[in-house]
Length: 106
Image (cartoon, rainbow, N blue to C red; front, top):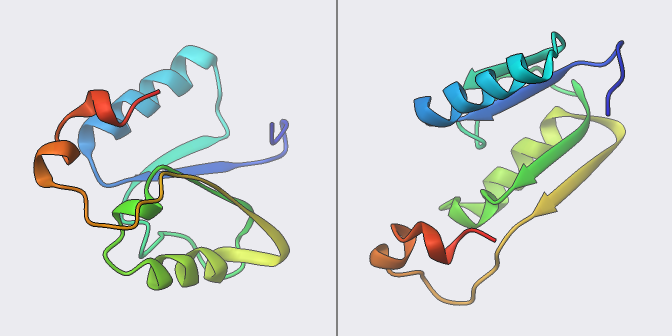
């Protein structure tokens, strides 16, 4: 979606997801995509770098959601967009439910 002149940086904290993402990028023939190890609360990009920040299913995992949102705002260019796809709950999710992937996938 970024076109040939755009650039994408994906961030994940797990080596397994980074490996999967890199393999998908190779299979798709993309060369304007980079995947970095890191935390969403401390994104490995400079201030005002991104036109769009997409958070897909991680905001609910942040211990400090406000800090995570501030970090997303930090990396957005003025007028940039934030897109969030997530699950919101009003009470803590039990550890057993967090480990049951069937409860989290669509």
